[in-house]
Image (tube, rainbow, N blue to C red):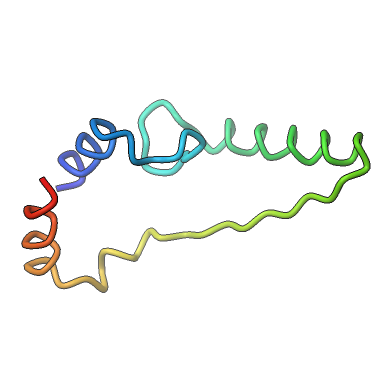
Length: 76
């Protein structure tokens, strides 16, 4: 199921280009360097920086898989 969802998300380009979790070729190291660059740039230009981080690793554990499959099949 994970492979099917990943392939579908890549096919329709639904993921944000800086989405690092659960994507091949994207590591936490790259994500941290990206955040550090953004914070450094904000400091250098005397702007504010804020980050919001979500961990959705357990999100699918709370979803009824029959409903998920039914709704996802209607989306293609």
